[in-house]
Image (cartoon, rainbow, N blue to C red; front, top):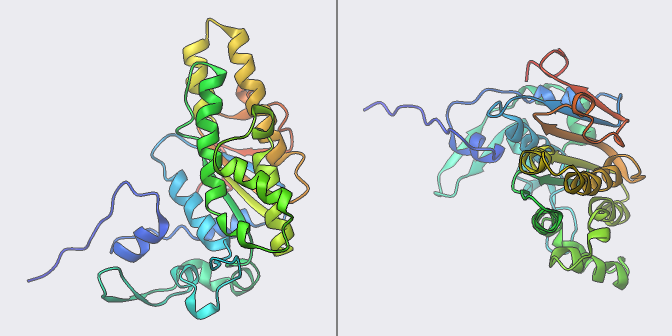
Length: 283
């Protein structure tokens, strides 16, 4: 009996789609477009359900250094991410073996050689940061930033990192930071990653505008309270993308344009790409 192709819907996990699905639209040349030596940070805006989160996860898995519990890069034969893009044999969780085919980005040998698995990446989604007051917003923001730190918990095992920095890392990890320190979270994590790997850091922030849009709807008749929330995100995103000397390049996704809504005016170095721009439209 013929087995119908396995179609995976609604996932934002790139490896899940490649490993467990039979139907796959190859958008991997987005990686090449993103890595073009132009703007330091960019924002891609699209409506919901257009694949923004999946593409962000693809970028993360392409760039990220795969490490062991001590923070040391894995030997090439143990790296899974590379095979997702250049092809190769993998063992699925079911125990079955699957032969992966090379994606389009594999034809870009120079990019694969220079970037694949070569950089520290900070990845965070702000989609669950919601609330109608600054305390509620910061409480949820602590959880999102804690998750970003948790992905790099191995830094606590790196001897070269100072004890004071490890204690500060744990404060972010266990959600014990002050509101003021919270806004510096992404930049501080960037500094530790850059110090450890001796490379600049890529920062990927998905759904950057969800907390602001949600707060605006709740507080449109209370502008002073909304301004407090807006100030918090200006400091958080400015620290990550504007005044971050450890940043290689940054990418944000969302629905709202920064310039159009004057949401985060501090980010005047971010180049926006909407539906009206051709650069990322094929992906």
